[in-house]
Length: 327
Ligand code: NDP
Ligand code: GDR
Image (cartoon, rainbow, N blue to C red; front, side, top):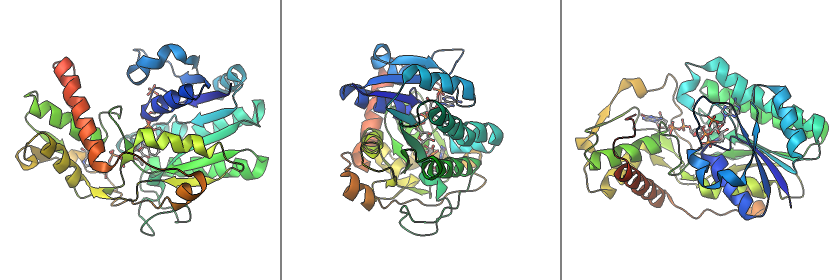
């Protein structure tokens, strides 16, 4: 039986990855940081199958203990301050968790179990102001937010530990991936949740920022399979994971409203509050390397993904219509 240690296990990706590894027969250790109220929503169904370790990415000692206690074959570092918009008002905290947290995790592995395989959750946000279309592993980076800058540090420190200490460290450069477990402030979920509320008469409008931004959106359940595949190879490497399809935020809005038979123009209000100080105008990934070397394939396309998310939010609001805040 293999053992995995996952940081960020309570988040969207962590929950899908934990499910995948449990299905494969892994013993799964999950790092959770102390919170004043429990936040197990994404892992409620597998909570009892996860071995919980209390640690924080900003606290090296706790990570050393986490590696010691779990003795992992594989470490998946998914924990981060992951919301781009929050990285401007909280640049220092973002740097501590999303950048320095990676060094802390790598150090813990290097000191306690250097032969463990390590996955770093890198991001297409590192491409920022894109230098080529589409973006692949060889496209130069140009981050446009404190989050993107922090992720770039995390990416290079992972490469550096691989080259300096001969560690099996991989960096997955993942483009946007979504699901019904996506945080409510990210645009896909904000839209599908808003559409569900409007359809059920719980909200009257949906306030958004830049509708022209273009993203390459995939399904999180497909993307965690790529993380696992990266750590099963003979040699460590970095891979872009994407769909190779790009859509505007407006197209996302249209698909979501169409799905419930409403015209989005009757409900969407542009609010400058949601426009970012520096925008990433477009992201489009070229994942040829992952397809060829990992044999990775995606199963869920853009329209199906959006419809599934709307359906899940309709169901959730129908079950507990008054319990959810409007974002
Ligand atoms: P989420 O925001 O859903 O999850 C983030 C996780 O990190 C949560 O479990 C959170 O815990 C944990 N975390 C935050 N700060 C700390 C800390 N100081 N110590 C320990 N844990 C912490 O993100 P996703 O699941 O969407 O993404 C997973 C990773 O992949 C992130 O690193 C993200 O930046 C990266 N990524 C995501 C992409 C996407 O499209 N989803 C694309 C590319 C990269 P808590 O529940 O306590 O808040
Ligand atoms: P992103 O995701 O910044 O790409 O980062 P997000 O869904 O927040 O934004 C995508 C695009 O939509 C535009 N947008 C809005 N975004 C939000 N959140 N709210 C709005 O009201 C709104 N209106 C328009 C944004 O300006 C942006 O262009 C995600 C995160 O998961 C990161 O952690 C990850 O690294 C990258 O994807 C790849």
